[in-house]
Amino acid sequence: MRSKEAKYIELVNNIKALTDGEDDLISKMSTVSCEVFHAFDEFNWVGFYRKTGERTLKVGPYQGGHGCLVIDFDRGVCGKCAREESVQVENDVAKLPYHIACSSETRSEIVLPVIRNGELVAVFDIDSPVPGLFDGTDEKYLKEITDLI
Ligand code: SME
Image 1 (spheres, helix red, strand yellow):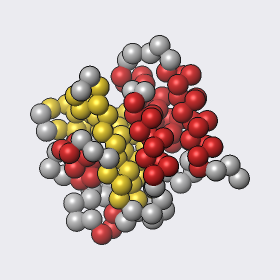
Image 2: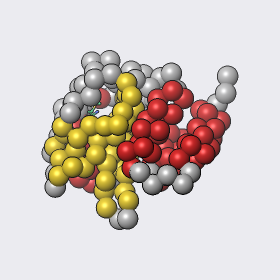
Image 3: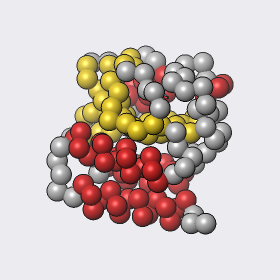
Image 4: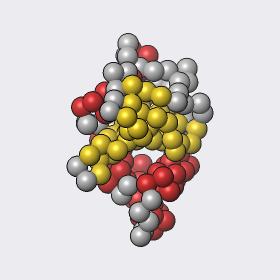
């Protein structure tokens, strides 16, 4: 079985090749959602919440099950990521009072800020039914991927 690191290296290279020269944000976010979702069987939701207002995030593009349409900056792990502009790793969301449960199966998640020209444009949310799935390896490579947006 290939290691998580080996899978990520291939994934980053694929995304670089697919998005090379593309400047459209939605096209790049769609490609990233698709490639990341299909790279790991353990992921049940992969996608973006875009900043559409002063303190508002709206869903999409994404792959996976249902995702709530609007998240205020005051709510959820995504809201915390947007407020603090910092990576959030949650390894047991059942214990988080502010977690927004779009799927009752989700147990762990990582959310990264997407910063373009110094401004937050979106957050990148990845969810999994596996508790404690995300570690420094995920953070390192997913950060590289958000930097390609
Ligand atoms: N995990 C998010 C909600 C969005 S969905 O899970 C797709 C949160 O608590 O911010």
